[in-house]
Image (cartoon, rainbow, N blue to C red; front, side, top):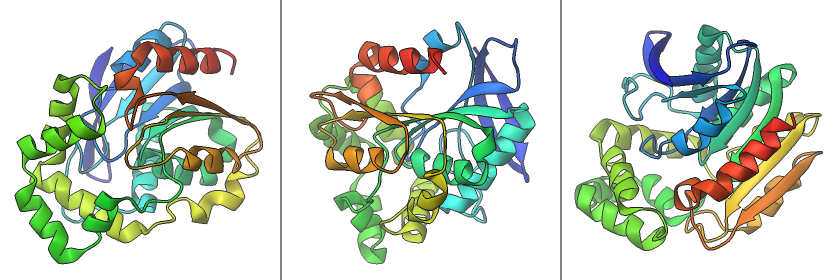
Length: 269
């Protein structure tokens, strides 16, 4: 795999690209959510043996640009994703999204159902009202949290909520989460979104004729397992694969299990 940079409306996004170029217009598109520090490589590597795969870093996160004037909203991210796919020449997408990447990807999908080949959602929210979301939506409290929760404190918290994930991976997630410009983007995103992140797109998504895979770590401290079942009900053709005993980043805790589920699903599409 190799890294490239795509620019959309003046905003740069690094993109990890790899795999089969025989059908360059078709690709598996990985969309991270509220943290670009959780790498996709464990899932991308086996997929690149039979398909093209791309994984952009979205504005405000990772090494992407973090402009103060970017629209840190679900629709704003959906528009940026559309621009990234256009620049990469992707006309048929197998979406794989995690966390807030789910609403971004689904918002894009709702407007481009004819370009969506399949959808995979990994611990993505239906109802965003966990404790951290409430803090980020509360002006003074969010500012206090930014000061109190430095990189080490954040890493320690992640070790308690996701003890199955290797410590080195959690340290990297904590490093990304505490970048000041990223924290600003997260706060603006959560305040702009409210609890029902996918509500505006549900009716259109019901008409998606393709297959949907939902993968869920049943110990998620932010998104309880009942949200997985609610999400399954939104689509005409959705299957649910529960990964027991792991939390919010199931592919980091059980990479082989999640990779097997995803690879088997995509190889049949």
